[in-house]
Length: 126
Image (cartoon, rainbow, N blue to C red; front, top):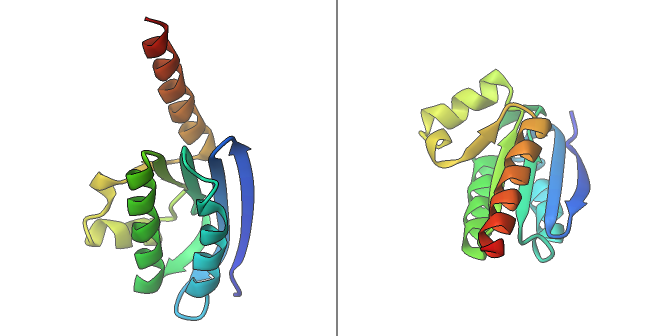
């Protein structure tokens, strides 16, 4: 199945990437290019909704870790949602999940981001 990638702008500096298919040796470069196309404008949060990804190779993992590191260097949030069990197992095997923000759904991730922003507003009111 060819990889399809949708990009949604959530707010200023916030994007959601929604890949559908497999991120493998044939498709990882497209995945990387799509993410790179928003990284310049993305400084608050990048969410990758992985619900449509049923297979990932080390090439795809490398992109995810690269993007996670770049977002952290910018002071932004990197979040993944909707990992299918077989993909989640890959992350568990390489012991990556504890160091990453992973949510069951986009709604759960949005609630987290809303709370972070609320706390920031409250902090600056004082």
